[in-house]
Image (tube, rainbow, N blue to C red; front, side, top):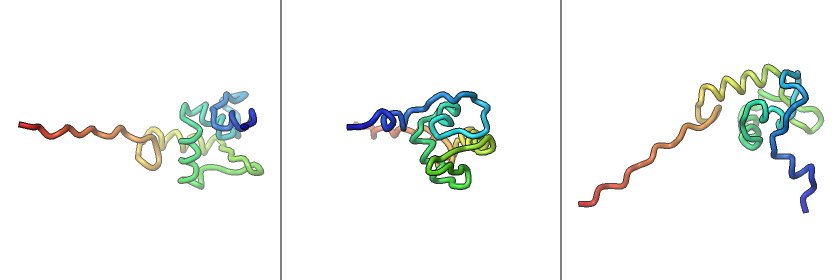
Length: 93
């Protein structure tokens, strides 16, 4: 049976102030309007963009600016994925 804290672990939560210096992953996901799982994957691939407070992953203002720029760029491994093009089925005569 999952605890309440575990259930909230993957849900973006609103920070006290959107301009605060340091935020958790859940607060950063809320501000960046992305999912917590996407943000964790992104931070895992770009290890220089976050710090730790004990065992918790935290981001500062510079990290959030770099994440925002990567999201705006839209490259596959560093930002949001572009939609895949659908292939048409071959015409049958």
